[in-house]
Image 1 (cartoon, rainbow, N blue to C red):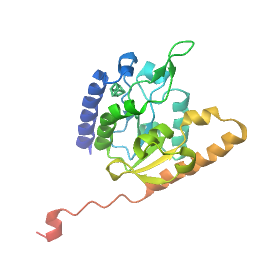
Image 2 (tube, rainbow, N blue to C red):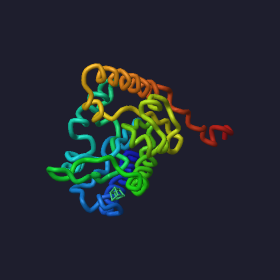
Image 3 (cartoon, rainbow, N blue to C red):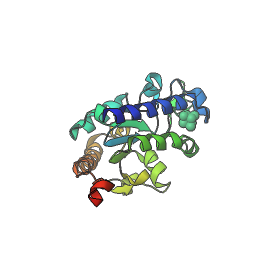
Image 4 (cartoon, rainbow, N blue to C red):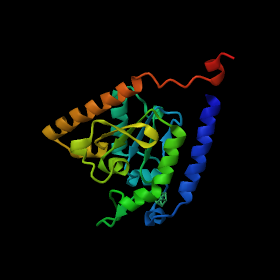
Length: 218
Ligand code: SF4
């Protein structure tokens, strides 16, 4: 297992260096840091958001602002530490739009997600998690198509990349924008989604095919 972990770490480090050198989209030239992703390369759960925000761009790490703190609480509620999972985004550079006090965060454009998809696919292929949790509508659309509606279609399992079960829930940044009764209602939905993730991870792992020698008894 140690060898396998080291192999995955090498592959991810190599891919992170390639992402860091990438300028395929204009946001690649505007960002301060490439935010490739981080976490356990042997994680059973991969958490995928839409794109880095200002704090993530500054530090080069995913989900480290207020939304990241809330994500850690969400994971903690199902007995997962941040270090237990692998966290990344659909795009590795911060998407920005002009704002009155400098660049402001925006959702990634479809072409940016398409450009960045090979990096994400490579991460999924290396980590091969048992489940993927997509956060927010944009991340969901990158896997499930432009018609995905988070209020209608979240909270159920889909077949994700490589056949890995994928579930969508609300982005923690969305929760942070809610107040009062709406916050209570969204929290309840997210809690149901998190419990579904816990149940999926607690299922027995798929049995490995028997070795040929065992199969034929020789
Ligand atoms: S978002 Fe992805 S594809 Fe676009 S420049 Fe950044 S690393 Fe490259």
